[in-house]
Structures are given as C-alpha cells and as structure tokens.
Length: 240
Image (cartoon, rainbow, N blue to C red; front, side, top):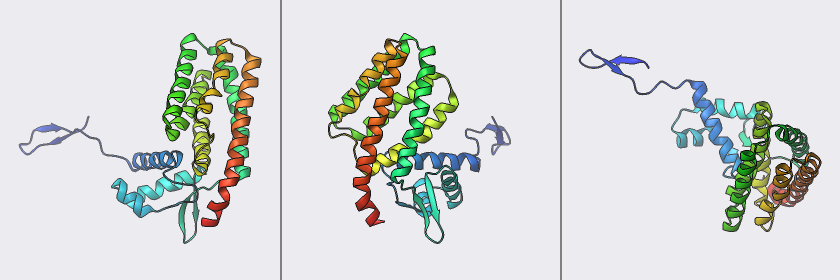
C-alpha cells in the first residue's frame, strides 16, 4: 500500500488508491448496463453525458469512454449531432439473440451434466423456488433477474468461463427487449413453472430429456418475446 508524508514528516498510510480512468469507465459502463437490464433506461432512450456525469459525480470524459465501450458491444448506438441512445432492438435481432442463446445453453447444459454434483441441483432448485416467491409477490423485475441467474448457473456448472461471459451479454440484450414489453407472462408464476422440468432432467441425468425440455423452454420464451415485442414496438416506434 502506498504511503505519503503527514504534516510532521512521518510516513502516513494511504487508505485509498487512485482510480485509473479505465477503472472508472468500466464502473460507469456497469451501471449503465444494469439500468438497461432492469428497464430504468428504455430501448431508444437518449443517454446524455451531462446527466450521467452529474448523477455519478464524475467528469464527462469517462462517461463518454463508457458509452463508447457499450457502443462497441452493441448496447448503445450513437447518431451524429444527436448523441447516444439505448439500442432499440428489432424483431430480427431478437430472433438472432434467442437463436444464439439456444446454441449456447444446449451446449452448456450438456457440459453441465458431465460435471453435475447433487449440490448443484439443489442450488438450481432453490433458484426456482426463489422465482416462485418473486412471482407470487408480483416482483417482476426481480423475477426476470432470478430467471437469468438460473440459466447462468447452468452455464457456470458447465465450466466454460467464455460461455458465461457470452451469456451475460445475451442476458442484458434479452432483458433490454423485455423491458420494452413490460412483462413476459400474464401469470408470473408460470415463469417459475417452466423451469421445473429442466431441473428434473438434470437431477435424473437424462441428457435427451434435458435437451428436449431446454429447447422447448427457450423456444417458448422466444415466441412470447417476439410476439409481445412486435405488439409493444408499434407505439414505441411512433414515439421515437
């Protein structure tokens, strides 16, 4: 830990380390991603450097750097003389995202079966029970986050860190699309119920059943999201 001289010439321990600009930009980007994921920043919404710098207590330079970083990841778009906006996905993009998700999760699930231990299944079952509780409480945003946490756990159990990183990016993009819709199912408990067969297949180590259940689960989510997105996208497009 670095030290500096106190008033009496003695070396004083420095409590904090200076923040590098890269660290600050990454932290700002993390907050923006979180706001997109939980719907506080909506698809198509303008994101101003001034607003972010004021609310986060920073200069505009690291905010701009963070926005450029997210632009390279496809979450933010910029328009000349208009500024930065949250990427507003279209139907084709959402279908591509879910197509990639299907490939990614089916592979991760197969790997997870090879490494699975009883504690992993218990942890997944506990996550489903959390989804039930959040659904009954009407905590929609928290339930969506818990849903993606379940699928991330499956990827983690598979043991490929790069798959987990790609899933995190996809999850933010999917949640951004769902944020425009507002909700996925009329009955929030239904979200939890759709995960029960997946846990059962994992517990029974039934590879064929796991593939069948997971394929049906993701395909149903894709169908619901695209249908509701198209319905909600009409008024949103008019506003933009």
